[in-house]
Amino acid sequence: MSRVCNLTGKRFMSGHSVSHANNKTKRKFNVNLRSVSLQSTILKANFRMKIAASTMRTVIKNGGFDRFIIKSDNSKLSENALKIKRKILRKLAPKK
Image (cartoon, rainbow, N blue to C red; front, side, top):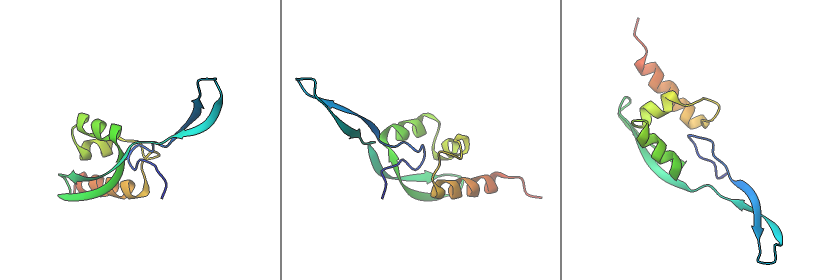
């Protein structure tokens, strides 16, 4: 399983480990992923996801999971998150 945030698409960063003698070797800076359960108030359901710790702070700042996922760009969301977003938008759409 790849180490990618399901909501923001954050991945590892690459860089160098630099020794005291200034020797550089390639390394990866992994994203700080956490398995969390996010609650949707609109759908009245919980969803398990792997998200970055910084994303969790952003979700809280934006007023909850529902608001965050509605505002977020579709290109950054995982397939699972896109399905949840479509369900939320269907539920919010006016019925004819």
